[in-house]
Length: 431
Ligand SMILES: [Zn+2]
Image (cartoon, rainbow, N blue to C red; front, top):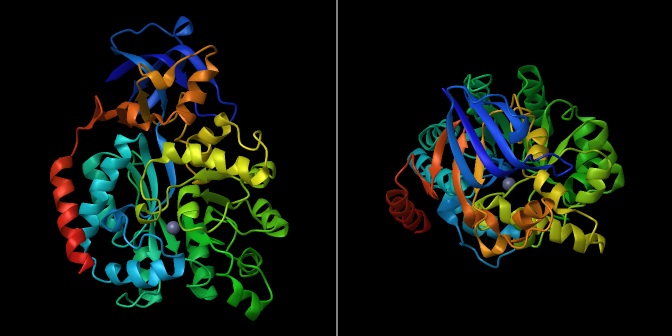
């Protein structure tokens, strides 16, 4: 089936911040067949034409998430990261069932779709239940099967064997893909990290881990090995291939040089880093070194939302504060970090931009709102999108050409029922 979407303008989601006024996007077999100015469009033929009054933008790509943690949203408010993990999160997670994860992921996925987020990288327990949840909502996911030494969890070797069983399983539509998610160098022993890296390279899978989230988490490793975590990972053959490192708040110049040398991508999580007072990542320095960077929400218990568009605004603000320069992260580049840049960072060049050949993951944002006036120049549409808090204006969302949000409501799952179920399960887990 062919469909033609026409829009007031298309925001491409490229680094330059291209805005195409009076635009046409043709969709066929789940992909974008043509995109550009209406004046240059090929004949519509027998395509169904849908006229959208607002902006058409790429589906946002959340580069780092533990979305089922919607069950723990708001809990442990005000605690620093180590106490928040040990006293609040890990005891609850020890009681989690696969059913909890599937219900929570379904709810979180619906929440993300409602905010224009069509794909996410998830590092969480019960990876196949996460895939099932996303199958119900119609979103897209890369599930990094977790390896983390927690009480009540199987030994790490067993966790890795279970994760490896999922290796290479992916569907033709690219809706679900599996990777490996060893938690971090300070929690997973180096030989296992090395093995995980070998396996992901062998299968072209994503290797996703946390690096330098806090200033002190690498102290023990520095003392034992005399190396920073990035240098240690390089020395143990963990880098190279499709590596995505979350946070990277506390990296020095030498670490950044290593990231550039090994083409390690970064999932930048400004809202989580701010809430847990972890610090402000050196995003400008990363981008200047051509390090791939994508934006992530992190888990909704440390954000506390899944509103990636809000985090675009925060990323721009924090980068400017860090560098004391309003030029440190322009709106266009900040939006790219959640779209085209994020797709590059997670190794999915089929996502993230409104461009012929890419998947038809598209978001319609209503611009008939006071927050979108005035528009002197077409570029103002992108600036307003970033600075005016536009996620509430998301009206329609398509994933692979399939509509999953219509007129502001998720159409694939029962959101009210999910709300009740999340409340009930969260209450049980908190006891
Ligand atoms: Zn995380």
